[in-house]
Image (cartoon, rainbow, N blue to C red; front, side, top):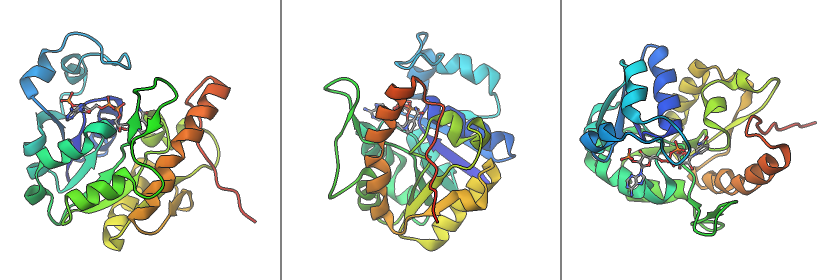
Length: 228
Ligand code: NAP
């Protein structure tokens, strides 16, 4: 399948690489291809400049957000939460119409330092904002509750643990669930939270994620739902 990943950070790279190794035809979207390829410094999380990453991942092409929106049959949002609406709008509402838009972003507000605050909370979520911004796209919130390494390799954390999906379109959720299965998520690990409103809980969970990470000194963990 043709899959477009919006976002050149560690999440975009991890998802693009994983889907590419599974045989999908993957592009990564960015604001300005030339500028992104011209970067020579690591990004704010210490990831190598994109051009360097590209050399070891030649199958994944770098294109503009607009070209990515037009290209992908499925589109993944892996952009900075504060910029996700701009990125999705640049990908093009018309390009995204009818398509599955897997939103893995978090609306983190770093203005007060770490741990981050959320720029949207309680009565709304980034997932819902994106769905409203591109109403003809079929937004599914998923993968936003764990480190990128875990998103694309559930075995990175041993044992049973979960990934959530939330979205208004059942068929779109089935498509995302299929992709998650391909990535390696067991069927019983994928928990459907219902409509896109379920994005609120998965985004607000990030407060606990950062607290647990502080307590454990690592992001190499995930949440597991244990029930009777
Ligand atoms: P990131 O640094 O949060 O985001 C990088 C992407 O955001 C780049 O593609 C960049 O565009 C785009 N961007 C930044 N400012 C922009 C602006 N003003 N307008 C348009 N686009 C802009 O990357 P990340 O760490 O991979 O995280 C991606 C998303 O996943 C975030 O929402 C994050 O909260 C969420 N998340 C991350 C993790 C993780 O393990 N890191 C885990 C869970 C959720 P350019 O390509 O043009 O620079």
